[in-house]
Length: 351
Image (cartoon, rainbow, N blue to C red; front, side):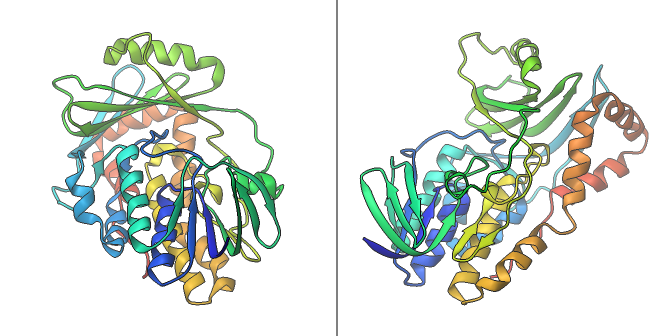
């Protein structure tokens, strides 16, 4: 069957692009290898910059109706105990934490409401110029193709675009019961061989993420098990690589969005924002027949913020130095507040 656009990957980037294209009357198919709801390795944090895009999709109230935690504070914990904590704005459109299984299903359903056909449980196995795709049992053709299928993008792999990466670090993630006194916050723990990010996600649960070199993960899991009373049989989801060279965001009638295009350091908690923003940007360029402008506008989306990602990566790769920085920040907290405020920003994307 023929479509105007085929989008591979029904995460926030793909579903956003699909909803906007279908809403504009394009024949749109959204292809997803999993069956929703499904969990995803993610910190589950929704940056305030996401709200304008969710408004545009008409789902902001629906997102707030889902179980979530309105995050009140960010806490940084260094090796051996130095802790710096500062409050987040008490704003209904502030930072929240919400399970990706719930958020992604809501966004996928919004794409369906807008008129997109959604094909779940269909892995992409063949891809030819044209575009001609084989997804599950379906043969599909489309004028435009959007890769929204993550850092290990099947579209990029089939087009021989994926760069070689070393497994320098691996991410693990799980949900566990929250300690009674944890509160509604994000806590970042710098550890000798990696880091642990923890966030309240509502209904008495925590999102726990661990990042470390593969050889150090067992030690990090033991630390987390003791700290948060995690049972040995607990299931952990995993993802790698955490660092990867960016790919060209456009190749003729192929656009890459979200992690398929550029991977950011998980420590900053901006991944969902970039997914939503790049998915909306791709839709705008397609619908306005401004495809040639997509690469420059995609670069502009990240411009001025990549230094934060570089700084965050340096912080977690050198935790002892970062711990000393936290000791200084205990005396001058305004400096850390300034840096974190650059991450938890309020800028949206143009519509």
